[in-house]
Amino acid sequence: MNKTASKEWLTKAWHNLSTARLLYEVNHYTDIIAVEIHYAVEKSLKSFLAFKNKRIPKTHNLLEIYIYIDNFIEFDNDELLLLKDISSYHIEESYPAFNRPLPPRDEIKKVLEFSEKLFEDVCDILDIKS
Image (cartoon, rainbow, N blue to C red; front, side, top):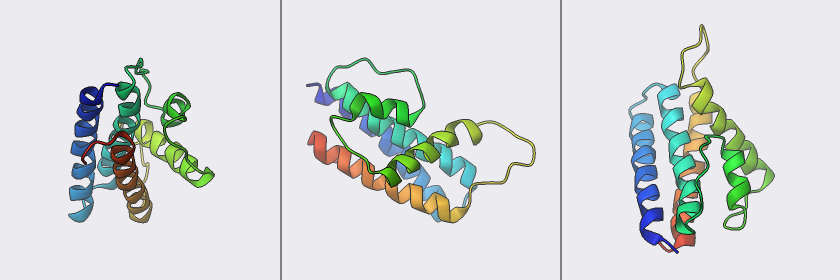
C-alpha cells in the first residue's frame, strides 16, 4: 500500500474539485468548470492505482480507468453514464470548436455533485482524511 502516493493524487484532485466548485458558485463558464471536474474525477480514480503501486495508464478516458479499479469501487449504470459524460469534457471542452454550446448549468451541477461525492467516497475507501 502506498498511502502517500494516493494522497498526492487526491490532493491534486481536491485542487481541481474545489476550483470547479468555486467557479460554479460565481457562475463562471461551464466549459472551464467541466474540465476541472474531469481532472478531479480522473485523479480521484487514479489514486486507487497509486495506492496499490500499480501502473497509472496514460489515458483520460474515465471508463477505461474504471476497468483497472473496479475491485475498489463499483458504479451503477447511471454513474457509468456520468463517467462517460465527464470523459467527454476532456476532449470536447478543452479545445476550441466553432459554435459549440457550453455545457448546461444543470448538467454541470449534477456532475459536480457526483464528483464531490466520489472524492469523499474514495477518501473513505482509502482511509485518507479528505
